[in-house]
Image 1 (tube, each protein chain N blue to C red):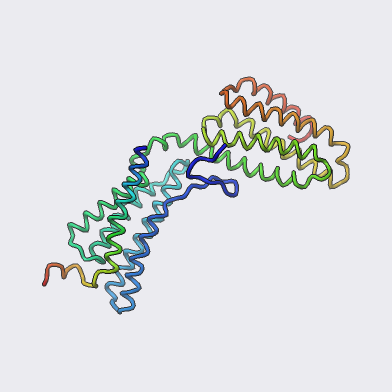
Image 2 (image 1 turned 90 degrees about the vertical axis):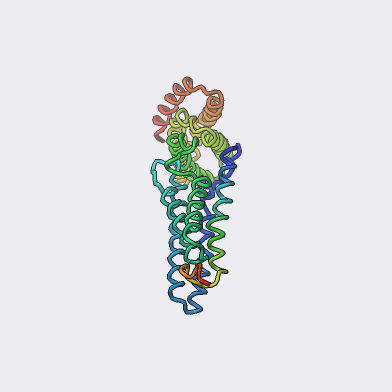
Length: 270
Length: 39
């Protein structure tokens, strides 16, 4: 399951490259400010510094707006950033490049149109942003799931002398990774997978942690077969959950999840 | 693919406006805009 184009995973989070270009426009007016300062031209230095600050503000707002798009925390950053970018560009054209007012205003409107086209605007949400509630929810749950998966991973590497257990844990991890990839591809799968992720990831993490604790006390050997049974069942149901997600069928799985939740409770791990 | 084309046009428009204005600001002589039109 490949990650979505344009995104990469790091530290359990899905990261997209966010609005770097506007920050590039900060550089030339900053150079103008330095040159003006070197020449002792205080007025031009003030103008260049002001334009630099405005470009930086615009870039920061656009970046925040792009990050906030598709989350539950709306922030009109792209709209405000577009306006700031227009003012900064008109200012640069008027004060620094020496254009007349009409041309400077045209530069400003051009920059505003550029921001709206390149990054969108909160006033004109794109079709993709309409799915934002599901997508944001999915992103959050997948992020949390990856943190839990990391915990499972740490416990897995602390288990010693029980290759059959680590093998089962690897199997469960593999299936959960595949399920997370499915949710990332289609956030609507989240509704059907949420319960599974909550029950299983927590359950698998608890099982592994409990085993490690028992191992540290030297009491793991007698519990190993029971844990192995539990993990085998979890691996089986994980594979089934993956298949059900592919088939868009959730009814049977709810029943199985119920049974497994009870079993985890009985084993004292959930 | 209209979205990708729109983004590309937006980036080019930004480069043509903000990019050009700021770079012109660096290379332009330090004359105040009020001087425009004077000989």
